[in-house]
Image (cartoon, rainbow over all chains, first blue to last red; front, side):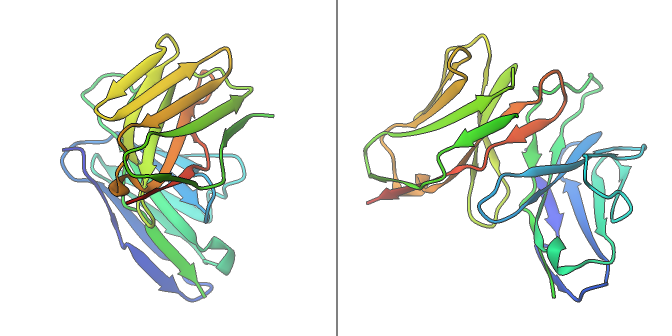
Length: 121
Length: 112
């Protein structure tokens, strides 16, 4: 149980194009999902918190107009990197918290997707 | 400033030995601390969570300690196996917050 998938696993695109990454919770519902970015040999950096049915909460320094997040259902959140540039090349990972109608607390375990490797040429 | 520090140098040990990884933090007051395993090109996998009022937690060959005075957590893998080779991340909750903050991880290599 508690499986999270991401699609695509790898994407190579030209500078200036937009790329959409999907994050799905396969066997549970997730009112809250997180999007992280990880550069080589560095820690996961939280980009934004995605809440189903509401606007995402972005971390300081993350451009919300560049990284569009849509959490349209309890099992799907999408991250769109708009007008991608080479400096956006990174490993993007989502995670999901399960829900059973209780209040989400910070002690809930996050289940991570396998990640998406984005390379912008 | 706030920091989570894990040894950036890789840890090389022989199969069967105990691996010990360290996580130190500064200017955080976490209610809990977590350890994750991450394989190359993959997302992290949750291993253990230890709360501030717990000194030690075990799960099979894994043991985690949490010393809030030293602001340190130790992660032990006993009877290590080559399959344990991976990067291990520690993470803690931001003070009073809802976010999880990750360390950069320590790479473990277990030689047969």
